[in-house]
Image 1 (cartoon, rainbow, N blue to C red):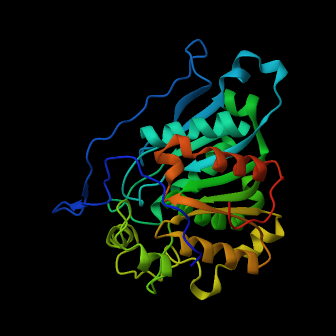
Image 2 (cartoon, rainbow, N blue to C red):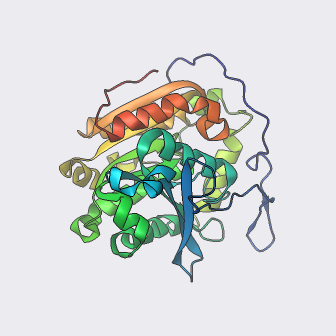
Image 3 (cartoon, helix red, strand yellow):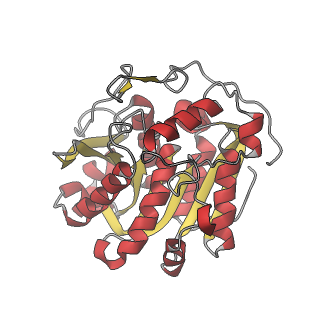
Length: 333
């Protein structure tokens, strides 16, 4: 484990991870949360526009698209934008694409990085255990490939796409990346150029140093990490399942496909996060297999850039460098 940095004060927040209630039917009790509506109207104030579109009515999945307001107002003066396909966090059990914290975070990506964002609302566990969320991610990629949508056709550079996710969304981005690499040319004209794993949600049966030292973390204690994986992994699977532990069996063979396609990977983490070591181990594994890998680790706590927008600046800068190929290998910020 890397040496911990200085403690950063955490904001007071409602935390669904601390007291997970499983109903008799196997579903989970989810308390109401603040959810933001989309805003597609360029006449309404705001730097970013958004709209919701259905993905699969039977699965009740959908997507929220974000673009800079400026490109709608002055379309002729704007070139097409890189696309970040984003997956929200919540341990695969909680939250949605329109959850207020993730909506604000995605708007920040658009405004600060200069991209179009497509955020997926995927099915949640335990009602829909993995690989349901991964399958929804692939549905989303095929939807982007085939749908005739004005925002996509006018503003999206589909030859310059990145899969990005926070926490469980980082896990999802990684697994969707493995599946997308196997799909290969089937996804064209959508072309994925890399992965952005933001505090990715990985673990294993063997505890890492950060899990042990931060097992009583006030945001994401070890028991909640374990419980959410127990609720989301296939029935009977342990925490060395490939959906939980990316290092199992030396890593997926599809990593070689990613490498052959020239994909790059940005892995981020914070020193006061129980998941930090697992994320760093994943980054080291990818780097060891020859993937172009950028590591961005800094002071702070799990998913802090989502929970406190004032902390997001350096992370947005790192993504901007990465998307525009200006990144250098770095471990500490």
